[in-house]
Length: 87
Image 1: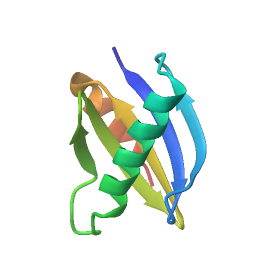
Image 2: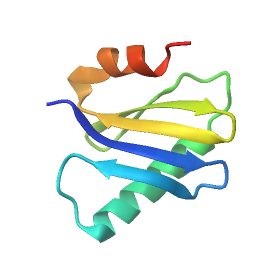
Image 3: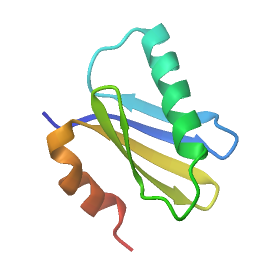
Image 4: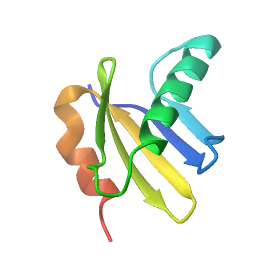
């Protein structure tokens, strides 16, 4: 189906921007954000920028002190990774 959500998070794990393209309750959103942010912030720079979580694939990129995270369906990773990794 495509992109499910976009998150912009600082290095401390605080969500600065969240846009969801599927309906989730506020509690589900908070839990999902917390799990994904902890998982992505714990990774080092030598690891790849793709993470599987629940039924999503997370593609993330760090720019300065912000992390941009995009949650997509399993079959949409190639198109999102192309957009995020442009110079």
